[in-house]
Length: 424
Ligand code: AMP
Ligand code: GLY
Image 1 (spheres, rainbow, N blue to C red):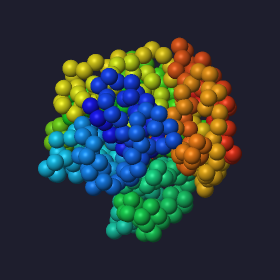
Image 2 (tube, rainbow, N blue to C red):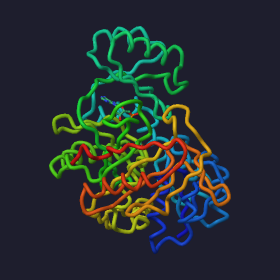
Image 3 (cartoon, rainbow, N blue to C red):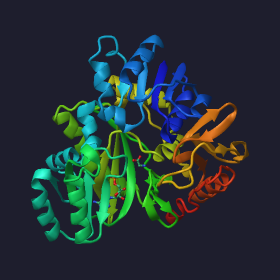
């Protein structure tokens, strides 16, 4: 098969690394890819939202499957674009159509979906510009802290946790009346704050059957000890000790099954990944968000733990026979430490030369925000490189990934040295 992966981050590097190992994969292309993805396939200089160019490329290169990494093309309808084109409609796209992608593209949609299917989540109410006064009044009666969520995609910045009523009311005004996040905040979900420990659960589905991939924990804050600003993710670990068999059974019964069944009952076609962002409150799972794709940097820890052929599983998703496919999960522990640019998650440094990958001793480097400048690797993104180690136990994985992270160098480089150590 010829496979095209869309995206350019660490997640897509991990997909490419895994897919390139499959005997079923003939040619692999990554659009646009980064300095590392060229090791596994051929980079193609096309933007993930340029559907026409992607379609043309797929036809002229006999692509048999398109795997969509990030949410933006899904929410904008790349799968629908393929399905409505006579020539493209036979090429399977892994990732939901626009309707299903609303699970991530609209927080209000996802909250209503959860309510319809009795899926445990925080209590919430949605407000618009027209109901701003009601929203302000609602805040006055709600407890603190309180969570405000822009309805649409806001590049990971649309969730605010407010600790005072003044702050919450001010933010609500800015989001609704002043379009703080543009169109994305034309609706705002006000949600009860849940106290607990977070977990990322990944479900692969063909729309009827599903398989639960290895779970992971993501470290979102920039600073050690989970302090400072939120980022796209500073590291990840899989498996997660508190997600034991009893907890995962609750997740499957209360969340996964009603989600997949709910989509099917509502006639929402869904072929792809459902990323369930959970909080465990005293051992009970609550959904804080759905994403219509895999997580980053979770995928960098999840892919190495899948021992079976990933392309075979993707074919199951495409063909509707996922239940006949084998998912083998390794008992080993994967830890990922993300190297980020100086200044990130604020304004950050770019175009710095990255060295040291050849010095890694027991980890794999998944490129994220990098490009090639002649022979040199240069930085381009806030999240630059994911260093992932797969080891027999958690301590060794954490220690190896952290030690190897320090073997990379670029000007202004930063990484957390405590990823996963809270789990020991
Ligand atoms: P999201 O952009 O939906 O991933 O949310 C960003 C982060 O906000 C999550 O990873 C949580 O840490 C936090 N968060 C979201 N919703 C809640 C909630 N209801 N209670 C507590 N924390 C939340
Ligand atoms: N790591 C969180 C995300 O991918 O949204």
